[in-house]
Amino acid sequence: MWDYSEKVLDLFYHPKNQGPMDPTPEPGIRVVTGDVGSITCGDALRLYLKVEEATERILAASFQTFGCTSAIASSSALTELITGLTLDQALKITNRDIADYLGGLPPAKMHCSVMGQEALEAAIYRYRGIPLPVHTDDDSALICSCFGISESKIRRLVRENHLTTVEEVTAYSKAGGGCGSCLADIEDLIATVLAEGGSERPSVAEPRDPVQVKTSAPLTTLQKIAHIQTVLEQQVRPLLIADGGDVELYDVDGDQVWLRLKGACTSCASSQDTLKLAIETRLREQVWPQLTVHAV
Image (tube, rainbow, N blue to C red; front, top):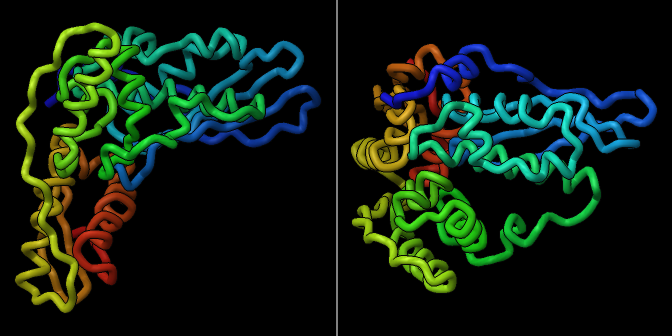
């Protein structure tokens, strides 16, 4: 179980400024959104800003987040930090400011603060109608296909947060936290960035075994069970366990799959989204596309 600060727990159980924000008919006032992440990757954030056009001051901010305790608390903290600021002032908010406001985040959860910073930038750049900076444009090579993390994003995180190890990059971006096949590439990239900046050499992380799920059809029931178990064990359970939850395979009958959510997942308001949008989507992509997931 993660050792969360009291502030993190308070904003998780009692999030402030949560929910969508409708467009306003008020003259001189504009509502804009910034999106980052993906539900299928486990975390997604939509940030809403209500901006006074004459002064570019943020009058209000709200959020919708699909994610863990840290993601919800970080999103809520971000809205409190930026309300009342001008857009230029808000652009100076960093992921570390969000973490500091929360009294710190577990190292493995720093990616949640990064997600907030990126959503803020996306909203402000959308408001101004200009392209996002190169570091969020993701035109560079894709390093982590599991979580859609690009080379440019890893380079930015390493430089701005002084990261030196693969484990730190995973904590700040989730890159390498899925199948693990990109860990060697991440290590090489860290070494390159640090060498460019004249910093120390990163430590070496042990690569994990990549997922070896076959999708050729038709699958026997035993093959389906084995493949589902592989995906759950290697890609789903580590993410859920990290937040006090868990999942187990209960039964398979034809294309119907029954799963039992456990721990914190049983009382989480987003459990249905976790089951259908995150787990079912992943299983359909990697096991067989016709399956349907049900909760026991």
